[in-house]
Length: 353
Image 1 (spheres, rainbow, N blue to C red):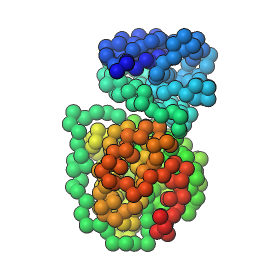
Image 2: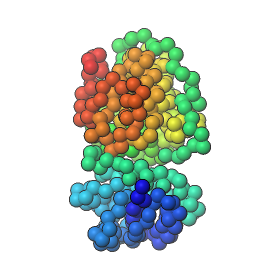
Image 3: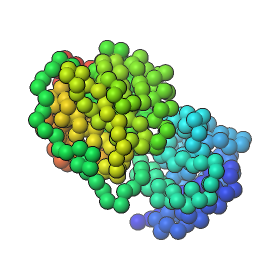
Image 4: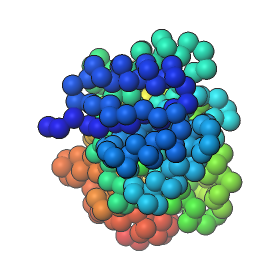
């Protein structure tokens, strides 16, 4: 296989030097250039176009967001954002994801050299994932790949039918844009939603706040004990698992620590398994764009417990990995394009398919 051609665009000489040296050690990646800002990058890209851009956000002459918009409008190219992790920076990075970036590697203001060295595997994985992204349509590794058994045992007897339905959604690469497309089209009267989006710690709060401003429904980063209610979407906090539980006739979430499951924390498999156990046939499970297989086994457990299950179709996915794996397991009843998923969510309230 040909190496992935990468260009690094960052105004920090330290970042450019460290990332170039680090990536040069990986046989599957070739750094074809570095640039101090997007305008210099564009000049170099005309001579040799990269497969993936590693892009900072705050830069002179042209900021990363403006550059990203220009790039996606004129020649869509996979972009991994490498930004400083601050509260304000999180908002900016979320904006970059909304504009088409397919990955995030967050960097601190202090101890940068050591951090970049320690984060080598994370960056390589982000670049490899970005290189596979389908831009025509718009995570830390564990030494051992654990299943949802590491957090809770397999689903028991499905719950009896109740009048209150809910929706569990799992997504990863490309999911920020896909979730925005879905949630902004839901009216206030809609089923409660519980969502796992693979995202670094501290980014999920800003992501939820942004969606809450854009949507008619209430969107929150989940806290332990939050109720799942019609017209509310709860997003699992980065770095922690989210489980659905039931107390009497009410659903709520449990947010807890634990090892990565399917190499992720939060894990879609954990959410889906807990939903199979707590809600059974009262739930709709949706698996969407993302790399890997997190969520496939959990969605199958939901279907076996009587839940309805959907997968986003390949044409509308940035990366079709997660839906594809769920389909292989027989976990999916229907495959829908992104634009039809909001209607399917609303139909689940009345039991319509």
